[in-house]
Amino acid sequence: MTVAAQTPQHDWVGQAAVATKGRWLAYRYLVLRRLSQIGILLLFLSGPVLGVWITKGNLSSSMTLGVLPLSDPFVLAQVLMTRHWPELSALVGVALVLVFYAVAGGRIFCSWVCPVNMATDLASWLRRRLGLRTGRAPAHLRYWLIPCILAASAITGVTVWEWVNPVSMTHRALIFGGYSALGSVAAVFVYDLLIAPHGWCGHLCPVGATYALIGQKSLLRVSAQNSSKCNDCAECYAVCPEAHVIPIALKGKEGASPVIQNADCTLCGRCIDVCAPDVFLYTHRFNHKRV
Image (cartoon, rainbow, N blue to C red; front, side, top):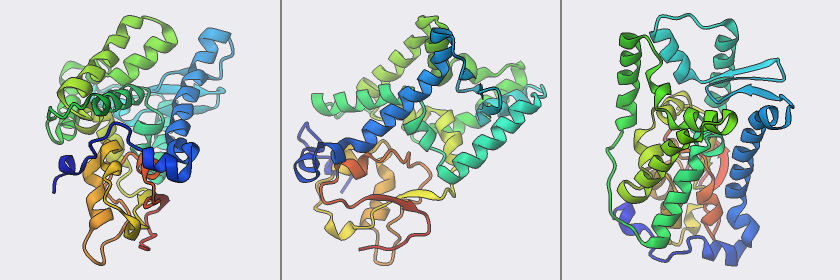
């Protein structure tokens, strides 16, 4: 049975979870993710809006309180390919980012930090509400884009992806103005809504692919530990932006680990939210207990 065939037909995914666990437990990780994404934006906006400079820069490169540098690894890789040597603070910032996401899970960036995720989540919700089931995205193109972009940066001498990257363009637009750049987010929204379900984050974005590679062996994981309670409602498939990561953990052969090992998992926690019988939970990669 395919994931598409398993997807529930009713509009309100999570209704059973609300009835069983209450509204907070059925939406807690979604709410916490939005607070995280908005809170990070506010850290950057506090300077230009309020004159209180907590964090300077954007998601590509930033400095918090004048002492904590953070830099995007994919941006640094492009800079190196242009044969420009970055400042020491950028190297320190990348090292800190690599360590954090290698432990916490690379794609936690996509679901808990990236502002474009709010647009793609909205597109996914609208697809369910409108009953749109058409469209298909090119599989794994995001991983092929990484070497192509790095090669283009080496040839042109500029950080190619930063000219079109919706993530950094959106952040710069919100922080520094120039809101025409938000058109890139609108394009991503339309693409996910009408052309390819979960198309941008799941198949095209090389930034997300980079963080997936960083977090391949991360400690934090989602587990279908209580898989024996599964009632086959398939609501986890409906909300998961990377639904292909679920089957092995949830319905794997006897002896298979319930831990979602696939680095494509965004650790968004929506499968935990919408599951009425509480099959899923956050855990660590070494917890192979199945109930």
